[in-house]
Image (tube, rainbow, N blue to C red; front, side, top):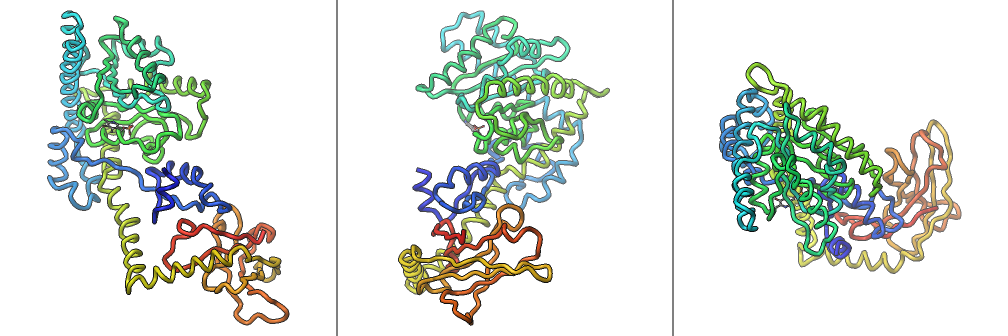
Amino acid sequence: MAYLAIRGSGAVNGVSRLHGEVSRRLFEPLFPRWPADEVPVGHVTNGVHVPSWDSAAADDLWTETCGKDRWLGSTEYLERDIRRLSDARLWQLRTASTKSLVGYARGRLSRQLTASGAPPEAICEAEHLFDPNALTLGFARRFATYKRPNLLLHDPERLLRLLTDPQHPVQLILAGKAHPADQAGQALIQEWMHFIRQPAARPHVMFLSDYDVQLTEHLVQGVDVWLNTPRRPWEASGTSGMKVLVNGGVNLSELDGWWAEAYTPEVGWALGDGREHGDDPAWDAAEAVMLYERLESEVVPEFYARDEQGIPKAWVTRMRESMAQLTPRFSANRTVREYTEQRYLPASAAYRVRMANKCAIARQMVCWRQGLEEKWPTLHFGELKVETRGGHHVFEVELFLNDLDPEAVKVELYAEGGKDSAGQEMERDRTPTGDARGEIYRASVLVARPATDYTARVVPYFAGVAVPLEVNTILWQR
Ligand SMILES: *Cc1c(COP(=O)(O)O)cnc(C)c1O
C-alpha cells in the first residue's frame, strides 16, 4: 500500500525526523541507483490538537497567561508567556490535576470490578487505592510487542520496591488493549495482571480496561510522568506523550519518534542511547535497568525534594520548560502550518501551472517523459577528465544524448558524503570543438578532496517536476 501511495503522490513525508530517516531507507528500492539521502521522503512531525487534551484547570492557567484565543493564530509568544508562571501556580495545577485523576481512576476501577462480578470487598478497596499526593506515572497504549509494555516488569521485585518506598511512594496507572488475535500482546497484559494481584502491589498499580480516547483524556490530564518504552526505531511518532505537555506532565521516554527530536535534559528524561539494537534481549534488559535507575535516582528524588512551601523546585522548573518549549512545537498548529506551507500550497501552485491553458504544461510533460523513456536506454557517458590547476579541479565529460533534447536533462558532478554529496550542475559547452561527437559538460570545484572522489551523472529535468519522485531514472558515469 505504501508503494502504491508513493507512486501516486506529489510529495512524501514521515511523521517525525527519525521516521523520515527510516522511511528513506525503507523506500530506497523505489529509487534504484539513487543515493539513500536523496530518496525523496522528508518529514513533518506530528502534533496534537491542544484544546482537545487540556484539562479545565490547565485551560484556566493558560488563559490567565496566554489568553483565550491562544491556539487560533500565531503561537510565537506562548513560550515566553508560560515562562512567567510562578512555581506556586504551576504546582497548584499539578496537585489539583493528580487529585482529580485519582478520584476518576478509583471510580472507574470500581465500576470495572462491579461489571466483572468482583466481591464487594474488592470494589470497596478500589475506592481507596492510591494516594493523591504520591508521584503518579502513566503508561497507556496498544499492547503491541514493539512498545515493550513489560519493560518495567523486567525485575518485578525492584519495581515493587520502587512503588512501595514508605517515604517516597510511587503509583502507576496502566491502560491498554491488545488486538484479540495478538496472543503476544494478550500475554503482556496477563503479566501485568499477575503483578497487580500481589497484595503489596495493589495500592500502587491499577490496570484500567477499555482504553479509548476518553480514558486517555483523563490520564494525560492527571499524570506527573508519562512513560513510553518503544523499541527504537519502531515508534513512527508517538502522540500520547504530546498530550501531557499542556497539562504539565513530563515525559520519560525512549529516544524514538517525536521524543528523539524533542528531548533535552531541561524538559524531561530519556531512555536508550539513541541507537538501534534490534530485539536483542540483552539490550532490553540493559534498558530496563536504565529505566529503574532513572526513576530511582532522578525522577523520584526530584519529585520529593520540597522547599519550605512544599514545592519541588527542580521539578516545577522542568515542568515549566516542558510546557513552554514543547507544547507549541508539538501542537497541531505547527504541524498544520508546515503541511500547508511546505506541502499543500506548493502542490496546489504546481497543479495550477500544469493545468493552465488546457493543460499546456501537462501535455509538454507527457512528451518530455516519452522522449526520456525512448532515449534513456541509449544515453551514455564518455570518460570523465580532470585537470587540477589554480586550486581547482576542472572536470570535463562527454555525454552522448542520442538526439535527446539537452534541455530535458541535467548533468551533475557528484561526490559521496559531506556537503558535496548533492549534485553540482555541470555546464554544457555550447560550441564543442575537435572531434567530440557528444555534448561536452564542464564543472570546476575547489580542491578539497581527491579528484577520484567525483563522478558525473545525468538526471531528468523539467521545471516544476519533482525528481526523483515523479521520474526516477538516473545514469552514472561510473
Ligand atoms: C493518543 C492515543 C493513541 C496513540 O498513542 P501513541 O502513544 O502514539 O501510541 C492511541 N490510542 C488512544 C486512545 C489515544 O488517545
